[in-house]
Image 1 (cartoon, rainbow, N blue to C red):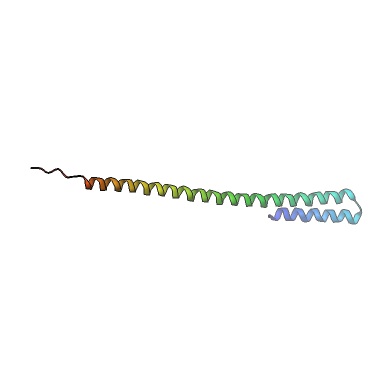
Image 2: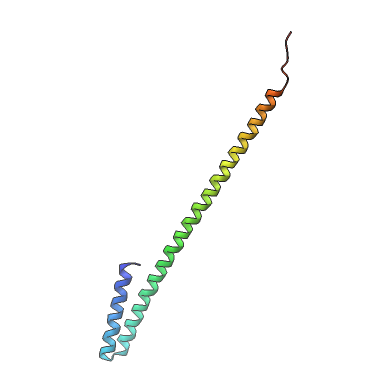
Length: 97
């Protein structure tokens, strides 16, 4: 919530109050509209911030999973290489002579 929206809400409320006190329905309605508009802007900004936070959390989660998958692939490759080395060690050695 920004200070600007809070200030705009206060201005709208003040204008609405002046309209009520003076009996000027137009000023009262304008003040109420300005106050409501500022409140809506505040709510939208808060919602946008919350969504951006969740998107960042989702990105972090996806990156974490991708890193894990990449690490798992590296482990699989290393295991395959180890199996190849074991096979090579088990192969009979040609004797010269």
